[in-house]
Image 1 (cartoon, rainbow, N blue to C red):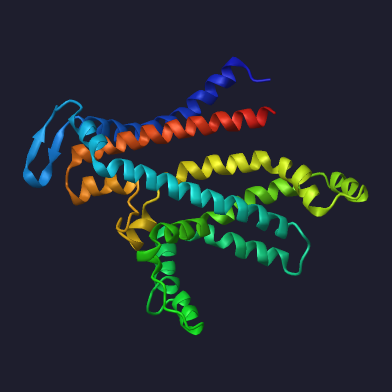
Image 2: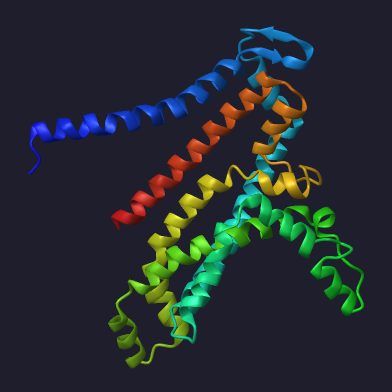
Length: 288
Protein backbone atom coordinates (compact mmCIF):
# COMPACT_ATOMS: atom_id res chain seq x y z
CA UNK A 1 0.00 0.00 0.00
CA UNK A 2 1.42 3.38 -1.00
CA UNK A 3 2.28 5.76 1.82
CA UNK A 4 1.96 9.54 1.77
CA UNK A 5 5.74 9.79 1.42
CA UNK A 6 5.86 7.46 -1.59
CA UNK A 7 3.00 9.32 -3.28
CA UNK A 8 4.81 12.63 -2.76
CA UNK A 9 8.00 11.16 -4.20
CA UNK A 10 6.05 9.90 -7.23
CA UNK A 11 4.55 13.34 -7.84
CA UNK A 12 8.00 14.96 -7.64
CA UNK A 13 9.43 12.44 -10.11
CA UNK A 14 6.72 12.97 -12.73
CA UNK A 15 6.55 16.74 -12.22
CA UNK A 16 9.29 17.60 -14.81
CA UNK A 17 7.59 15.55 -17.52
CA UNK A 18 4.18 17.04 -16.73
CA UNK A 19 5.66 20.56 -16.73
CA UNK A 20 7.36 20.07 -20.11
CA UNK A 21 4.17 18.59 -21.57
CA UNK A 22 2.09 21.50 -20.36
CA UNK A 23 4.58 24.02 -21.73
CA UNK A 24 4.69 22.13 -25.03
CA UNK A 25 0.91 22.34 -25.35
CA UNK A 26 0.02 25.61 -23.64
CA UNK A 27 2.60 27.94 -25.19
CA UNK A 28 1.47 27.37 -28.83
CA UNK A 29 -2.18 27.44 -27.74
CA UNK A 30 -1.77 30.71 -25.86
CA UNK A 31 0.13 32.29 -28.76
CA UNK A 32 -2.60 31.20 -31.19
CA UNK A 33 -5.27 32.59 -28.87
CA UNK A 34 -3.37 35.90 -28.61
CA UNK A 35 -2.93 36.27 -32.38
CA UNK A 36 -6.59 35.39 -32.98
CA UNK A 37 -7.57 38.74 -31.44
CA UNK A 38 -4.94 40.67 -33.42
CA UNK A 39 -4.66 41.96 -36.96
CA UNK A 40 -1.32 40.44 -37.93
CA UNK A 41 -0.33 40.39 -41.62
CA UNK A 42 3.47 40.23 -41.95
CA UNK A 43 3.68 40.84 -45.71
CA UNK A 44 1.80 44.11 -45.31
CA UNK A 45 3.72 45.08 -42.14
CA UNK A 46 0.39 45.26 -40.30
CA UNK A 47 0.05 44.53 -36.61
CA UNK A 48 -2.79 45.67 -34.38
CA UNK A 49 -2.65 43.91 -31.00
CA UNK A 50 -6.41 44.05 -30.35
CA UNK A 51 -9.27 44.05 -32.83
CA UNK A 52 -11.75 42.11 -30.70
CA UNK A 53 -13.66 39.26 -32.31
CA UNK A 54 -13.30 40.59 -35.87
CA UNK A 55 -11.19 37.61 -36.98
CA UNK A 56 -13.73 35.13 -35.59
CA UNK A 57 -16.61 36.95 -37.25
CA UNK A 58 -14.76 37.03 -40.59
CA UNK A 59 -13.88 33.35 -40.36
CA UNK A 60 -17.43 32.30 -39.42
CA UNK A 61 -19.05 34.49 -42.07
CA UNK A 62 -16.71 33.27 -44.81
CA UNK A 63 -18.44 31.25 -47.52
CA UNK A 64 -15.61 28.72 -47.27
CA UNK A 65 -16.18 27.92 -43.59
CA UNK A 66 -19.38 25.84 -43.81
CA UNK A 67 -18.13 24.13 -46.97
CA UNK A 68 -14.88 23.19 -45.22
CA UNK A 69 -16.75 21.83 -42.19
CA UNK A 70 -19.08 19.80 -44.43
CA UNK A 71 -16.13 18.42 -46.41
CA UNK A 72 -14.35 17.47 -43.19
CA UNK A 73 -17.40 15.62 -41.86
CA UNK A 74 -17.96 13.83 -45.18
CA UNK A 75 -14.35 12.67 -45.30
CA UNK A 76 -14.28 11.51 -41.67
CA UNK A 77 -17.60 9.66 -42.07
CA UNK A 78 -16.47 7.93 -45.28
CA UNK A 79 -13.15 6.88 -43.78
CA UNK A 80 -14.79 5.55 -40.63
CA UNK A 81 -17.33 3.58 -42.66
CA UNK A 82 -14.62 1.91 -44.75
CA UNK A 83 -12.25 1.21 -41.86
CA UNK A 84 -14.93 -0.19 -39.55
CA UNK A 85 -16.51 -2.49 -42.13
CA UNK A 86 -13.15 -3.46 -43.61
CA UNK A 87 -11.61 -3.86 -40.14
CA UNK A 88 -14.37 -6.23 -39.01
CA UNK A 89 -14.00 -8.36 -42.15
CA UNK A 90 -10.18 -8.39 -41.93
CA UNK A 91 -10.29 -9.27 -38.24
CA UNK A 92 -12.60 -12.22 -38.88
CA UNK A 93 -10.36 -13.38 -41.75
CA UNK A 94 -7.10 -13.07 -39.79
CA UNK A 95 -8.60 -14.90 -36.82
CA UNK A 96 -8.95 -18.05 -38.89
CA UNK A 97 -5.95 -20.40 -39.12
CA UNK A 98 -4.09 -20.10 -42.41
CA UNK A 99 -0.70 -20.78 -43.94
CA UNK A 100 1.77 -17.96 -43.20
CA UNK A 101 -0.58 -16.26 -40.76
CA UNK A 102 2.21 -14.26 -39.10
CA UNK A 103 3.49 -12.88 -42.42
CA UNK A 104 -0.03 -12.00 -43.53
CA UNK A 105 -0.66 -10.07 -40.33
CA UNK A 106 2.59 -8.11 -40.77
CA UNK A 107 1.63 -7.22 -44.34
CA UNK A 108 -1.82 -6.09 -43.22
CA UNK A 109 -0.34 -3.84 -40.53
CA UNK A 110 2.36 -2.35 -42.80
CA UNK A 111 0.31 0.56 -44.32
CA UNK A 112 -0.19 2.07 -40.86
CA UNK A 113 3.55 2.78 -40.61
CA UNK A 114 3.75 4.57 -43.96
CA UNK A 115 3.98 8.36 -43.59
CA UNK A 116 0.88 10.20 -44.86
CA UNK A 117 2.90 12.21 -47.40
CA UNK A 118 4.53 9.08 -48.82
CA UNK A 119 1.21 7.26 -48.93
CA UNK A 120 -0.44 10.14 -50.79
CA UNK A 121 2.42 10.30 -53.31
CA UNK A 122 2.23 6.55 -53.94
CA UNK A 123 -1.51 6.62 -54.56
CA UNK A 124 -1.32 9.80 -56.63
CA UNK A 125 1.43 8.59 -58.98
CA UNK A 126 1.06 4.80 -59.01
CA UNK A 127 -2.71 4.36 -58.89
CA UNK A 128 -4.61 7.59 -59.65
CA UNK A 129 -2.34 9.03 -62.35
CA UNK A 130 -4.53 9.46 -65.43
CA UNK A 131 -1.66 8.71 -67.85
CA UNK A 132 0.51 6.09 -66.15
CA UNK A 133 -1.51 4.94 -63.15
CA UNK A 134 -2.46 1.34 -62.53
CA UNK A 135 -6.19 2.10 -62.66
CA UNK A 136 -5.74 3.88 -66.00
CA UNK A 137 -4.05 0.83 -67.46
CA UNK A 138 -6.94 -1.34 -66.22
CA UNK A 139 -9.46 1.01 -67.82
CA UNK A 140 -7.53 0.93 -71.12
CA UNK A 141 -7.25 -2.86 -70.93
CA UNK A 142 -11.04 -3.08 -70.69
CA UNK A 143 -11.44 -0.63 -73.56
CA UNK A 144 -12.67 2.22 -71.41
CA UNK A 145 -11.61 5.85 -71.18
CA UNK A 146 -9.24 6.42 -68.21
CA UNK A 147 -10.91 8.03 -65.21
CA UNK A 148 -9.18 10.98 -63.54
CA UNK A 149 -9.90 10.20 -59.91
CA UNK A 150 -8.26 13.27 -58.37
CA UNK A 151 -10.24 15.76 -60.46
CA UNK A 152 -13.49 13.87 -61.08
CA UNK A 153 -13.85 12.12 -57.70
CA UNK A 154 -11.41 14.01 -55.44
CA UNK A 155 -13.13 13.52 -52.08
CA UNK A 156 -13.60 9.81 -52.73
CA UNK A 157 -9.93 9.51 -53.72
CA UNK A 158 -8.69 11.11 -50.51
CA UNK A 159 -11.08 8.96 -48.47
CA UNK A 160 -9.59 5.84 -50.08
CA UNK A 161 -6.01 7.00 -49.43
CA UNK A 162 -6.61 7.78 -45.75
CA UNK A 163 -8.79 4.70 -45.19
CA UNK A 164 -5.97 2.52 -46.58
CA UNK A 165 -3.67 3.98 -43.93
CA UNK A 166 -6.09 3.58 -41.01
CA UNK A 167 -7.52 0.17 -41.91
CA UNK A 168 -4.62 -1.70 -40.20
CA UNK A 169 -5.26 0.19 -36.95
CA UNK A 170 -8.94 -0.77 -36.94
CA UNK A 171 -8.03 -4.34 -37.88
CA UNK A 172 -5.60 -4.69 -34.96
CA UNK A 173 -8.07 -3.41 -32.36
CA UNK A 174 -10.95 -5.49 -33.72
CA UNK A 175 -8.78 -8.60 -34.10
CA UNK A 176 -7.90 -8.33 -30.42
CA UNK A 177 -11.61 -8.17 -29.60
CA UNK A 178 -12.38 -11.21 -31.75
CA UNK A 179 -9.59 -13.24 -30.15
CA UNK A 180 -10.88 -12.41 -26.66
CA UNK A 181 -14.26 -13.98 -27.46
CA UNK A 182 -14.94 -17.24 -25.63
CA UNK A 183 -14.92 -19.99 -28.25
CA UNK A 184 -17.34 -22.05 -26.19
CA UNK A 185 -20.15 -19.59 -26.99
CA UNK A 186 -19.59 -20.03 -30.72
CA UNK A 187 -19.32 -23.80 -30.37
CA UNK A 188 -22.57 -23.93 -28.39
CA UNK A 189 -24.36 -21.79 -30.96
CA UNK A 190 -23.03 -23.96 -33.78
CA UNK A 191 -24.20 -27.12 -32.01
CA UNK A 192 -27.65 -25.55 -31.63
CA UNK A 193 -27.78 -25.10 -35.40
CA UNK A 194 -27.22 -21.33 -35.57
CA UNK A 195 -26.07 -20.30 -39.08
CA UNK A 196 -22.84 -18.28 -39.51
CA UNK A 197 -24.67 -14.96 -40.06
CA UNK A 198 -26.69 -15.42 -36.87
CA UNK A 199 -23.56 -16.25 -34.89
CA UNK A 200 -21.93 -13.10 -36.23
CA UNK A 201 -24.96 -10.90 -35.57
CA UNK A 202 -25.87 -12.07 -32.07
CA UNK A 203 -22.48 -13.15 -30.61
CA UNK A 204 -19.46 -11.74 -32.45
CA UNK A 205 -20.74 -8.26 -33.34
CA UNK A 206 -22.07 -7.42 -29.83
CA UNK A 207 -18.75 -8.58 -28.39
CA UNK A 208 -16.90 -6.25 -30.79
CA UNK A 209 -19.11 -3.22 -30.07
CA UNK A 210 -16.79 -1.77 -27.42
CA UNK A 211 -13.75 -2.14 -29.66
CA UNK A 212 -15.65 -0.53 -32.55
CA UNK A 213 -16.57 2.42 -30.33
CA UNK A 214 -12.94 2.89 -29.28
CA UNK A 215 -11.79 2.77 -32.91
CA UNK A 216 -14.36 5.41 -33.87
CA UNK A 217 -13.24 7.68 -31.00
CA UNK A 218 -9.50 7.47 -31.67
CA UNK A 219 -9.77 7.70 -35.45
CA UNK A 220 -12.19 10.63 -35.37
CA UNK A 221 -9.83 12.68 -33.20
CA UNK A 222 -6.96 12.14 -35.64
CA UNK A 223 -9.00 12.32 -38.84
CA UNK A 224 -10.36 15.77 -38.05
CA UNK A 225 -6.86 17.09 -38.80
CA UNK A 226 -6.38 15.53 -42.26
CA UNK A 227 -3.88 17.66 -44.13
CA UNK A 228 -0.93 15.93 -45.82
CA UNK A 229 -3.03 13.81 -48.18
CA UNK A 230 -4.96 16.87 -49.36
CA UNK A 231 -1.82 18.99 -49.73
CA UNK A 232 -0.06 16.36 -51.85
CA UNK A 233 -2.95 15.29 -54.07
CA UNK A 234 -5.32 18.21 -54.73
CA UNK A 235 -3.93 21.20 -52.76
CA UNK A 236 -7.45 21.88 -51.52
CA UNK A 237 -8.95 22.15 -55.02
CA UNK A 238 -12.03 20.36 -56.41
CA UNK A 239 -13.98 20.70 -53.16
CA UNK A 240 -11.43 18.94 -50.93
CA UNK A 241 -10.66 21.86 -48.64
CA UNK A 242 -11.20 20.76 -45.06
CA UNK A 243 -11.25 23.00 -41.99
CA UNK A 244 -7.59 22.25 -41.28
CA UNK A 245 -6.60 23.08 -44.83
CA UNK A 246 -8.65 26.27 -44.73
CA UNK A 247 -6.68 27.40 -41.66
CA UNK A 248 -3.43 26.61 -43.51
CA UNK A 249 -4.51 28.73 -46.47
CA UNK A 250 -5.41 31.66 -44.27
CA UNK A 251 -2.09 31.55 -42.40
CA UNK A 252 0.49 30.68 -45.05
CA UNK A 253 -1.03 31.42 -48.42
CA UNK A 254 -2.90 34.61 -47.43
CA UNK A 255 -0.35 35.50 -44.71
CA UNK A 256 -3.17 36.54 -42.40
CA UNK A 257 -1.89 35.20 -39.09
CA UNK A 258 -4.76 36.64 -37.05
CA UNK A 259 -7.51 35.18 -39.24
CA UNK A 260 -5.76 31.81 -39.43
CA UNK A 261 -5.27 31.76 -35.65
CA UNK A 262 -8.97 32.40 -35.14
CA UNK A 263 -9.71 29.49 -37.47
CA UNK A 264 -7.30 27.31 -35.50
CA UNK A 265 -9.06 28.11 -32.21
CA UNK A 266 -12.43 27.37 -33.82
CA UNK A 267 -11.08 24.03 -35.10
CA UNK A 268 -9.77 23.15 -31.62
CA UNK A 269 -13.14 23.97 -30.03
CA UNK A 270 -15.09 21.91 -32.58
CA UNK A 271 -12.66 18.97 -32.22
CA UNK A 272 -13.02 19.03 -28.43
CA UNK A 273 -16.81 19.14 -28.65
CA UNK A 274 -16.80 16.08 -30.90
CA UNK A 275 -14.23 14.33 -28.67
CA UNK A 276 -16.28 14.94 -25.51
CA UNK A 277 -19.42 13.70 -27.25
CA UNK A 278 -17.65 10.52 -28.40
CA UNK A 279 -16.03 9.95 -25.00
CA UNK A 280 -19.47 10.03 -23.38
CA UNK A 281 -20.64 7.41 -25.83
CA UNK A 282 -17.55 5.29 -25.11
CA UNK A 283 -18.13 5.63 -21.36
CA UNK A 284 -21.74 4.50 -21.64
CA UNK A 285 -20.70 1.61 -23.87
CA UNK A 286 -18.03 0.46 -21.42
CA UNK A 287 -20.45 0.67 -18.47
CA UNK A 288 -22.99 -1.61 -20.16
